[in-house]
Image 1: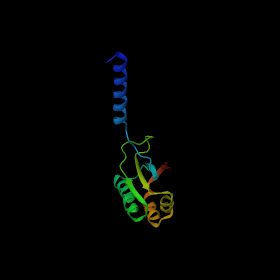
Image 2: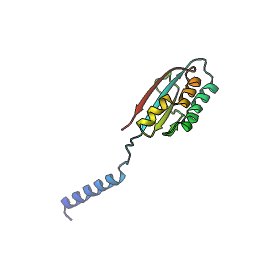
Image 3: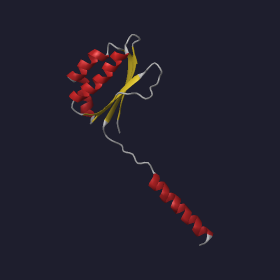
Image 4: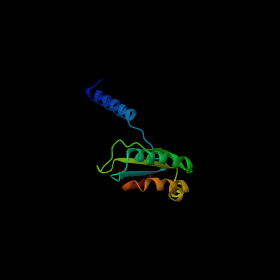
Length: 124
């Protein structure tokens, strides 16, 4: 095999290996609602836990919620110590959540405890 042939073969093998090793990912059409929380100074750990567990309870009652996350692994800025995420099936589910009675009931527990929150909704 000529030197050129070896180079071409090596290049093809590298390209094939890169294609096989390429990371596969999806671009779902669901909507992800991300909330960062800064609690009031007097909020106890038990109250924080109750509010975060309330996200799961609320999700069980509102149609169109696919998944929830309530354990933050890293939150910035530093004043924000906790977070939760709700994944909605679609825009209609996200809109339904905003005025749903279960959401309103949960807010009665959550809102008096938080100093500030930041929320974003993200989709493809």
